[in-house]
Image (cartoon, rainbow, N blue to C red; front, side, top):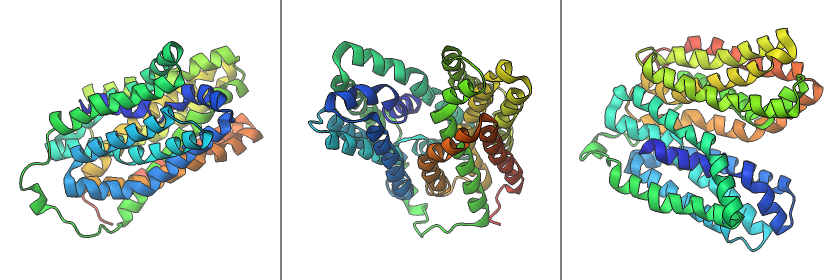
Length: 372
C-alpha cells in the first residue's frame, strides 16, 4: 500500500510535467519554460518545508503526515486542472512542493521504521521498488488520459487518485503510531552532528547528479554521438536499471550493510562514464545504465543508511534534516549542469563523476552509532 501511494505521488509531481507542461502551457498561452520555472519553485518549497515534515512525523506519526500530503497534492492538482489563467497554473505547480515535502520516500520510510524499527531495511527497498513505478508508468498514464480527455482531466485524474485511493490508504489501511509511543519520543530540537553533516553532503551530491541526469541525459547521449531516436531509447534504460538493482537489494543484498549500498550508488555513474569515454558511441548507453543503477541503490540508501547508523529513535526527523540540503541542490543542479554540458560532454561527465567519487570517499567516514 505504501508503494502504491509512492508511485502515485511521484507520477503526479516529479514526472507529471514531462507530459503535461506543453499542452497546459499552449492552452493558456504561456511558454513551457514558465511552467518548469514554477516546478523549480516547487522544489524550493519542498526543501524549505522538509524539516517541518520531519517534526510533524514525530508529533502525529508518518501515516497522518502522508494523509496530509495527499490533501496537499490534491489541492495543487485541482488548482492546476481548473486554472483559468497562467498564473493560477504556475501557483498550482509551486504548491506541489508542499506535497513533495511530506509525501515522498522520507515519510513512507518513517512509517516503515515506526512499524518495524531496525528491521525495516528490506521493506524500505520494497517500497522504493514499487515507488519507481511512478517513473515507469506515470508518463504513459498521463499521456493516455491527456489523449482521451484533455490536460485538465489529466490533472484531475491524479487529484482523484490522491483523494479516493491514497488518502484512504493513509488513514485506514496503514497502521497508525502505536499507543503510548508519543510518551517516549524526544521532542527537543535536533542538533546536527558531524556524521549527519557528512551524510547530508553525501546525499546532496547524489541528488545533484541524479537531477542533472534526469534533465539532460537524452541530450548528453546525443552529444556522445547517438542519434536522437537511439538516445531516447537508451535513456529509458535508466529507469529499468534502477528497478533491477532495487529488486537485487531486496533479494540478495538485504542483509548487507547499507554503507555498501551507498558506495555502490556512488560508483556506478563513474563506471558508466568511463565506459562511454573509452568506447564512444557504442559505450554511451552505459551512462544511462550506470546512472539508473546508482539511482536505484541511492533510494534504498537514503532510507536504510540513516536507520543503520543512527538507529530508529527520531528517525523521521533526522532523515528529513539529512535530506533537506539535497532538496535545495535538486532545484539548482539542472541549470548548473547545463553549463558543463555547454563546454563538452566530456567535461560534463568529468564533473558528475568527480562528485560521485567524492561521495564514495566520504562514505568511509560513516560509522554505525556514531555522533562524531
